[in-house]
Length: 286
Ligand SMILES: NC(=O)c1ccc[n+]([C@@H]2O[C@H](COP(=O)([O-])OP(=O)(O)OC[C@H]3O[C@@H](n4cnc5c(N)ncnc54)[C@H](OP(=O)(O)O)[C@@H]3O)[C@@H](O)[C@H]2O)c1
Image (tube, rainbow, N blue to C red; front, side, top):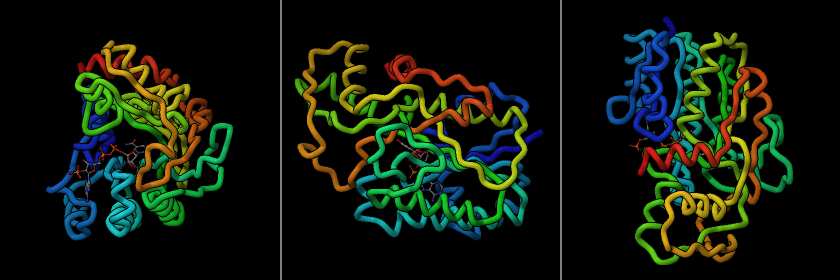
């Protein structure tokens, strides 16, 4: 039986894997997060893999606070890059594959058509830069695994845009939301299910492959907020504003739609439209 360890199990993607685990009984899935399992603690990890044999590590742990990363570049670098390098060393020593997640923020957003897996990386901020460094470390480590880039994650778990807007729409008379950044909202539960369905197909791992996975379609943050409101129907007024009117510490790409053709074709996956994924998520939140 394939033994899978999910790291960062309390985050929104980690919890999404926990949700699906009972539906994949032929995988033995283990879940770890801070404080018992600290990706930055090399001794602790070494002890873990010495005592527990694992076939696949799914790494959902990351420094994901995009604006805060601008003030804490070293912390972001340690978790998003240095720790990945160390995990790769353990992968070689203990023979497990690594499934790692990365982000649309490795691109600068100057494209006008969906980004492909091989397009050049040009991150605008610390978060994207450290995630790109993590990708590069994994690609040069001589290990087997996947890097799955995703975008605009939402779920009933943790902190995310959909949960924040859901709450604001019920508690405010008006809110302003950025309408000039375009991306593909992605339901973490769909991403976790797709990853496990791909693994179920017993893929052969040779080197590090990059895939893109998002829900299908794209919108702006304003479009996403409006779609939430249409489903929950509150009187709150949503104003569309430009990025310039809503300054944030980190610069974000104007356009970061990812082409998902490769993962769709290779694993015969259907990508749910973000609107219906949102409907499902709001039912679970609501
Ligand atoms: N969120 C998005 O919109 C988005 C978009 C594109 C790509 N991604 C990528 O998708 C992946 C999952 O993101 P997510 O939104 O699920 O992240 P998340 O909710 O922030 O979860 C990250 C998890 O990692 C844990 N963690 C932090 N430091 C750790 C350490 N030293 N050792 C072990 N665990 C640690 C966190 O614990 P604490 O909460 O206690 O710190 C948290 O449970 C990440 O690789 C992220 O870069 C996310």
